Image (cartoon, rainbow, N blue to C red):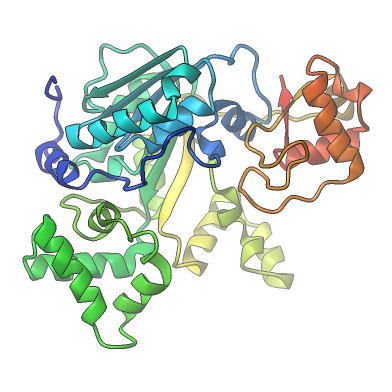
Length: 389
């Protein structure tokens, strides 16, 4: 297996870490991955960002940059039939798990091409442009995250989208202190560090903030050794607040195209009455800054970027009636969905349920022939019906 080409200063130590602890530690299984994640469905992402699915995007070219053990690559294959997918990672140990995962899931049969390669995301010069780049939990483990983002930006198609997940300062307060304590105790980043890290959190006095936070928030996520190690023993990590995040994006000449967990950044989640009215009168970015201050549990940012500014489509009633539609691919339950794209309980009126059925049966029929504009608009606003531009 070829060694990674261009290297970040942290590459050798991070690669060795993930060889010891292939991440994420999700179990292997036969057959397709469980459930879905709409952020890995290109059509769902296009509709969320643009307000519609543009024409000519049926078979996208997709890069999973820092694919780890292949959980994300698996979903990218199964949620984007016919796509061309490349998954890369610097850890051969993680890639070995990824290859087995995708072989057992039948991922290659879902796409037109699947490649899984040991490469750095800084080593992409030989690749053409990608319509969608997924890089979740990767750039913050580089010594120079800015170089990583510029590299990904250079491989993004002019109308492509990039999905990132980066750590947030505030929600990792307890995690950072636990990391620092383990560093001071010199436990290392191997099996001994894993044992001592678990022992530390189990033996701290009752009511200790670090132990309580881990138990209440992260114990389930950290049940797998690889996940515990990734959280508390990682040798290289950067986190951001919103101000530094937007500076990071702008330095790469990219444009913010929306949070992929937009509901987290809605002030109505935290405020009501006059305070909510004041919050909603603020410019959009100021609203997000307010949410950041009010909710110190936000532990990460997940968001979309584009090469050019994005202006979501605005639909008149006449345009809605003339448009064609696509049932959101990420719904749970057949023939009538019972969970939405975020796996939340779904309630549909008879008219809405009928429209989703008819769109499946008559994908080339204008929506106006099947429902009133109010029904179409409501389903589109909830991302249950994707509009075709």
